[in-house]
Image 1: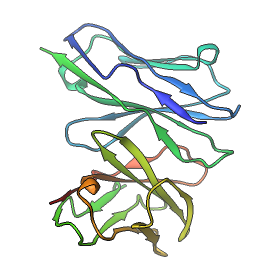
Image 2: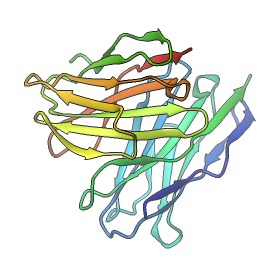
Image 3: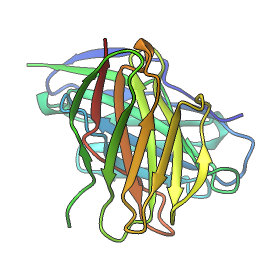
Image 4: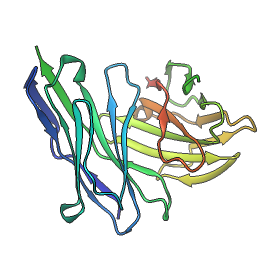
Length: 115
Length: 112
């Protein structure tokens, strides 16, 4: 069955520190997509990244980087040199396009960046 | 390009009433999905519409229903509201052959 686990419910770090948000997923399919979304206090979910199951290359976008490891079914997200504006709830999600294609979200990790 | 819009943004209803929420997708997007977000259950998938047809459905009771119009705008209806229906309802749209869903700001429903 599809499942996304974000074991860290809440994390607090001081500004400029690096922080990694963990995501572990379960799927029976070989074709799947993984996502990260950011939800700031305004409530709107902001798309950050999509990764398909056949592409294990890590990705870096500015201060953001993602580490996809199929061997451990993990898709972790690292923010380097964190800033107060990074404070938000971050969701990891999974979809199986050959099954029902709906997106299953983890419970989210609330990240506090302290000034 | 305008983003996903949802109306109303806030709503207060009493138990037993019904409510209709509206979502306008990004221009050109034909898929609209609805999600319920609560502190306890997190983000849960309600249903997805594509070209006026329901394509996927989550595990919600029949009190939750939706529809999509020919212009891709979608409405979600909840009948006989219960206190537990208080939540942020998020709508998302995506284009064909695209797996990124773009979310609206949500409608915060409070049932008293």
